[in-house]
Amino acid sequence: MQAIVDRIEGDMAVLEVDGTKFMDVPLAEMPEGCVEGDVYEGGPGAWVKDDGAKAERLKANADLMASLFKH
Image (cartoon, rainbow, N blue to C red):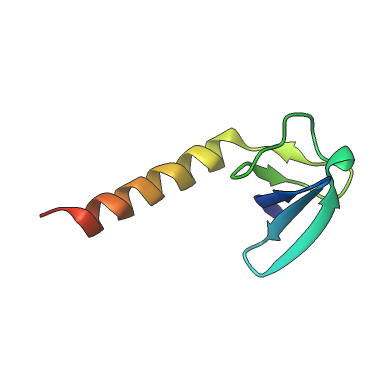
């Protein structure tokens, strides 16, 4: 399962899971240093950060913004 950290609310991470639903997970159960936009694979208690997937998402978003605002 893929989870993207949508936002941090207090001591909870709100994850978008597989692009279909949201799940609240206590920050204590997430890897240390968890921040908004991070991408994880796995499941509760076994999340593994996927920096490659995060980089791909950031590039895709930047490319989209560039195409929308070019003159």
